[in-house]
Amino acid sequence: MFGAAIFAAALVLSQGLAPLVSAQSSGYSSALKKIESAFTAVQSAEREGGNVTELVSQLNQALALLSLSSNVSATNPALSEEYIANATAIAEHVLSSAPAIGARGDAGRSERTYLAIGSSAGVVALGSLIYVYGELVYYAIFERLYRGYIVKKHD
Image (cartoon, rainbow, N blue to C red; front, side, top):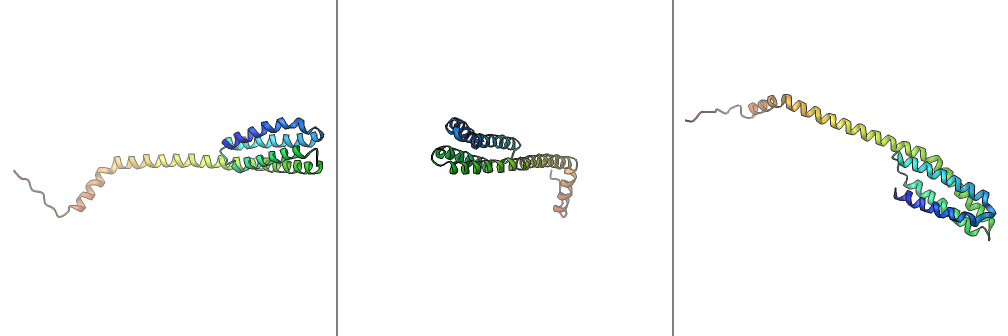
């Protein structure tokens, strides 16, 4: 959750950089839109219980590339386009990976639910058996342990 907050702050900061790169607005804006959609997919995967730490790290890397692109756009447009292409590729990878990670988190959550239900049912069953047969088992064990003992009444 903390990583998502850092990513959201970086996304807001990168929105502020958008006017600075008007010369390459089409590539920059499409990369930014791709990163935003990847961020939405990561949020969805996190809501489903997936471990999105690696995805958030990759999105932060894509934002860093986009920021580098805006910094070098005036001096080296070819390098700027390369940074944009790399950021877009990273965002596409995150976008394609997020649903699988969310599904794994959802499966893990349902597995934990079934485990908790099964454990609770086992405890209830064991308690019921002890309630019903506990006295008989106790006396059977007592008889075996103290078989040769004779109990005499003292006045």
